[in-house]
Length: 310
Image (cartoon, rainbow, N blue to C red):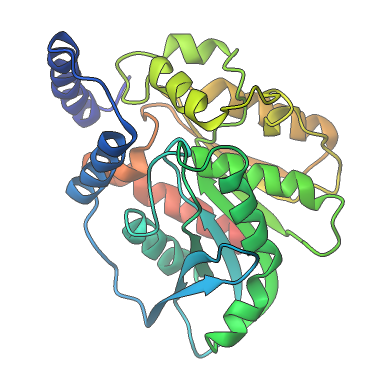
């Protein structure tokens, strides 16, 4: 059964969406960004306070990439988790995800680096992905410049479209000795740009993230007839060099089945994979913490335990 608090909130949201459609209101990149920022701000409290938080820029080409560092333990050498925010490659930012990254750093004890990659439609495929790849490849000098203490142990994490980037970089890292990725955390990830799994239809209307909106995101992201299947992490080559993986999925998420298919593929290949499924949650529930506090707390605990080998 869908979480009761989420259901009540969704009922009100769906009424509002229906009214807007009847009035001819159409989504734009700006309104989508504002909506995601407002939803997260209203449903996720700021904090927690951390000993050190700072902004930096990764100089890795013509366009430096902004990042925000969350150091939960400045007095010791900690592993590093590179985080890519969700938002359909169109919305979200370091600022929007600040409370989520603070919770991740606080729960895990890892130094979290959140990436402010470029967004579609202004910057379509592959700009955002290239930003994330560049940060992963040029991360250590940035930490040195910020006088952070760290271990050269790297995990990649992301939710939704950020999970796409994490899984893609993990696939690329299989054959790149300069990018040793120890673990990856994929939170209700988008892994199949072809949108051919049953849950896209089953959960594609009325559960916040709708199939029509996903297709719209992808149309703005792929603007030049790119091979969407080839760009999908679900179909990229998988070997036992893929990092140990944690996949978190939600029953009422349209991306549920591609997450399950990815777990099965890793299991078949012999890649160590942990899977946590929330059978009463929807997509993006971390951005709705006040409505799903227990699931959010359990998710941060699960990620912390995975990263720390518990």
